[in-house]
Length: 481
Ligand SMILES: NC(=O)C1=CN([C@@H]2O[C@H](COP(=O)(O)OP(=O)(O)OC[C@H]3O[C@@H](n4cnc5c(N)ncnc54)[C@H](O)[C@@H]3O)[C@@H](O)[C@H]2O)C=CC1
Ligand SMILES: O=C(O)[C@H](O)CS(=O)(=O)O
Image 1 (cartoon, helix red, strand yellow):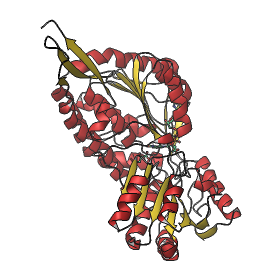
Image 2 (image 1 turned 90 degrees about the vertical axis):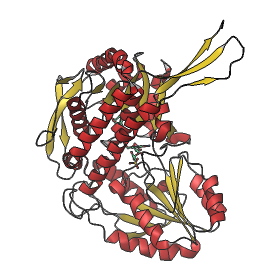
Image 3 (image 1 turned 90 degrees about the horizontal axis):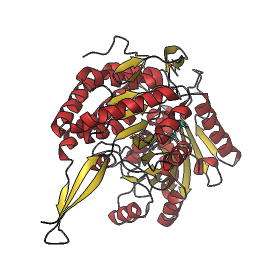
């Protein structure tokens, strides 16, 4: 089932109906500033309608067998992959990332649908040894209920499927609130779900220009049993507080401050390749992007020279153009944050190695930047840049590197390059992060539990752990036997 020719759908999707709102809001192409569409701008009443539709659909959806839910998820996966190019083009138009990255994200996002189509059939309960000869202990794993998924603009498709696929597999209906900057991909996903036959109300998309009113409904309506959020830590804390009133189960995928440690026994060429992949993917706009590079004294200059040479070659431009490796940042605020971090670092003694200013293309294009001689007094040491800036710190001992890496309230992803196996085991165990990559720059896969510790979040997405986030255990004691 092909998407509409331009793949642009501008209405919200509630109870199996495409719905307009009292107003509309513009979705623009960050590379050109052109308006791509005017999308339905829904309010709190519409959000309550979506919750009601999901709640009404839940009994029948949970009664579907695991194989029936698995078959629909598999069909959704097939439809997504059959429309990979159309979805990728739409994603590049509304988010800006290079087309090759968008193609990769569609496949990555679809992999969660494929994986949980399989996991749906493995949602098992158990019997446990009983506490009496006349008793039996049964444990049922049951769907938690209506799920609200609030997702960010930087991965407009994968952050939706990474939440909705396990929720749907477990037997939960979902209400999705996509980012106002990137609703078009979410609506295209809903169209494909409708096309393959998901029942009305099982999957709903509420589009809105001002998220707070929608979020208030999704975090306080008692019919919503689970909130799954991906976005900034400040917003996550606000949503978590709002969930407290009805004791909702919550998953939080929040901000990061990833260290990328290069030890003196590292393969420097591999480390540079990994640093480029980890730092500049999506123009530095991912939560697992390297935020700080920590390089041991003995290899500092050699690594810096190799890194700068590669960064200087990166082509900046419209993501639809061949060979572009860096698209525009999402908005002016993102550009201003990168500029503020650069200015602060240079004022405090940092040394500009390459880039350092908005790109000559104008708009929100920015030069991929490397700054050397960075120190702990600079904002980049403690704040997430979320842009194409690589600040390079130096360190002397392994213990100093570990202390620097852990000196943050965040704990999402960490990376390091080394070859001595004793050093690898020691560092891997000492880093306080939910995810650690050793001699790798990209760690994301549907097969592993993705998530953070400390103020980077709660819960995990991906792997069999991701299904648990959308289930509850019911203990049944059968007596009098
Ligand atoms: N840990 C992870 O997997 C990820 C974390 N992030 C973090 O998010 C930030 C950048 O992404 P943004 O989209 O700008 O984050 P954001 O937190 O501003 O927005 C994320 C989503 O929350 C919604 N939102 C904002 N305020 C809300 C409210 N009061 N009630 C309900 N919904 C609300 C937005 O509309 C959007 O859909 C960075 O800090 C980044 O590290 C982004 C993506 C993934
Ligand atoms: O939102 C993000 O930054 C993603 O979680 C990163 S990844 O999963 O695509 O690596």
